[in-house]
Each structure stands twice: as C-alpha cells, then as structure tokens.
Figure (cartoon, rainbow, N blue to C red):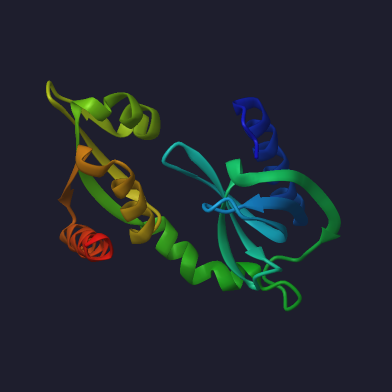
Amino acid sequence: MQSSVGAENEDVKRVYKAIQQSERLSFAYRDAEGVESARTVEPIRLLWEQSAWYLEAYCLLRQANRLIRVTRVSKLDFTGQCFVPGSSDSAAERRMEGEALAVKRGVTAHLRFDRSARARVIEQFKEACTHHDSYTDVIAVFYTMDYALSVILSYGSQVIVLSPDGLKQKLMLEMLAMQRRYS
C-alpha cells in the first residue's frame, strides 16, 4: 500500500502514462477487507472522487469492470503488453461504457455533520464543505449508492442524510439489519 502523498502521485503519473500508451498494468491490490491479490488490468482513465484517485479499468483476473483506488495499489509495473482500446482483443472500453455513465452520474448526497466530526469531514470532503456554527454541510457525488452508504456509516451518529430519499431509505434498512444482527 502506498502510504505517502509522493508515492501516490508517482503511481498516478505511471497509471496516466499507461493509459496514454494503452499498456497493461500489473500490481498487487488490497481490497477494503485487507485481502491482497495480483491484478493485471487494461487502464481506461483516472477519476478523482472524494479526495482520492481511482483507476477505471478492465481487470483480466476478474474479467470485469473495476474502479480501483490507487492508494490500495502496490508493486505497480508496466507489463510491456499493449492493447487496442475498443478492439475485439480488448473490449475494455466497450465493456466500461454502461458503468462509466453510471460513474459519471453517481449519487449526489446532501449530508450534515456534527461539529465533532469537522476535522475528518474537512480532510475527506475539502471544498464540498459549507461550515456553520454547530454543523458542516456537504454536497458530494459518490460513484455508487453502496459507496455513499459505507462512508455515511463510517461516521455513525455524527452525520444526517438530508437527501436523496433513496439513500436515507437504504441507510434505514441497513441500520435495521444491523440491529437484528446484534439483538
């Protein structure tokens, strides 16, 4: 895992170069649970989401589209294997078309955070923050509903979802499921 901003910036530069050259990348990837796997991908583009870089790519191991958080990548290397975006040999861009549209649209959420979470909120959301005396409002776009839900749950009782209603409903269902698990 890349731990410094400098190392992450170098990885972003290398990923960008691979995108420009249509060259496959290989790396070790650590998922949200900490499980590491070796991956080879056909990189399509870089996305900046909630103060973090994501690589949009077609993963050859999973044979599926993936959004890969760059900070979870280590041992990044060029494979020397070029691919032709959109060709029959490499249909990564075509496969990504539907998901890329969903990623661009995302889920726009209006969140209100308690003052006690201000430092973390500023770090995570930066310019999306509007500060008030006792709370901070954030209007942010999350790439999926599940990702929005995971961020919100990580703040516990320090956050209120003001909109959209669908996100509020999904949060309530998740909290009910958690309550049943611990009852």
